[in-house]
Length: 165
Image (tube, rainbow, N blue to C red):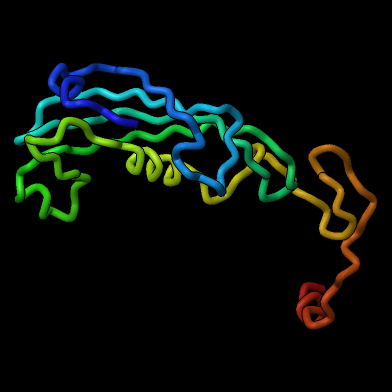
């Protein structure tokens, strides 16, 4: 996603950009659509510009419990500062991108790439109430039940079971 200095100087507000999913080089993610939506705004900042907004996309996921395929909408906000102020650039705690007065454009593809990756959940679940799969027969317990019983009893715990009696 490339922004030109003329866009920055106009202080665009809630501008929609549609980015091709292929340009972000996210091979580990499968998108349900071809595009990623990015809405951003530009404001004046210390010797530069502040760009903020949000990114959203539909991602094809596989449930970690039942292995069913599902589509999940991911959204994430971003906030970066473009500046030539050396004190801000040296600050490691801020999302600052060096932007010299001579530059005519800025490519935010790497920022959008990182925002999309950070929006990915650690645990992918098709629903909060997903029952998963039977560990014996592999039946998806969300779709049907099985007649399996837990036959893997561990005799090491039998002494503790006797204490209960």
